[in-house]
Length: 339
Image (cartoon, rainbow, N blue to C red; front, side, top):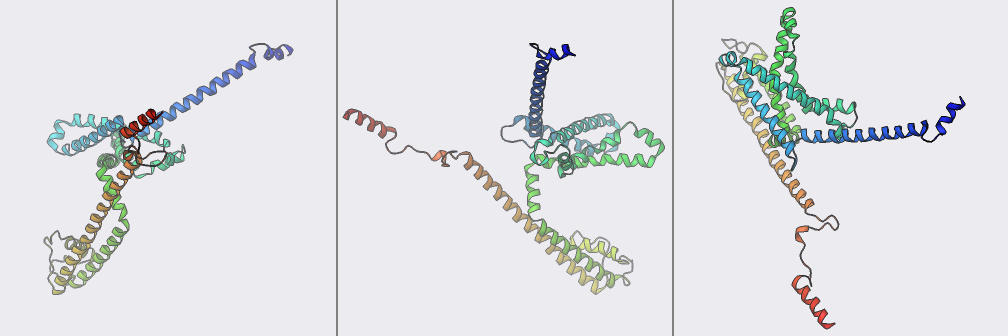
């Protein structure tokens, strides 16, 4: 026991060596965590919409955008039976490649989202990110992966209906079109314009539904028993006629036969024109306001970039003061001559 107690006191003993190793290990872990945070922040910046001068992020955005458009083109062309029979293998391999790319992208976004302050919590932040609109679109974009699992063959033999449901996930490829909103300034502008008038659009939608319900009820009362073909035998049947008239897409094969029904049809048509004219004006005004806001933000950014960090003055407006330049040189020479 005494010999063991004396060992730490010896030069280069166990305590000093353990302390040195602990410090080195702590330093190594700190450097590793710092490197991981740096890599995470860089990946988050690359996957985000490209900023000024970030060529790598711009290249990634362009690659993903082209991949989305090619995938949608393959989805549309693959619906042609002759083309699908001839190039089914090519379409299948391309779909696997697209799913792999989007799966890796979703995993990287989920891992690096904690680099942003609003998602900084390791677990809660990632859960909050997963329920965000764009993250849900990314998740829907990789749901067709469920239809490509090897276990689906066994499911198809045991439960044919469930296999049909799994294959329906392939229709979720259309959700990838929503990913364009992340890379398109025009789509983001449209989204901000719609959000700015969402309350007005909600009111107009409620009024439109009320008008449709009242009109369909009146049509059912006026045409229900008098119509020879029975096209207004219920309120839902009358509602379809009211929607067609309100949207002014044509009456089709259905027409009213009573005078009251024709008057109601005319009123519905005029209400439909008013209902669609008001949101069109609101959306146009919202677009103008959004473009004006973007121009103001651009001008403010340019002014901040050109402002002096010390006095706040505009750097481009600095001019030589009195006595500077040639006059200043002359003044200095005159003072030198006087001396």
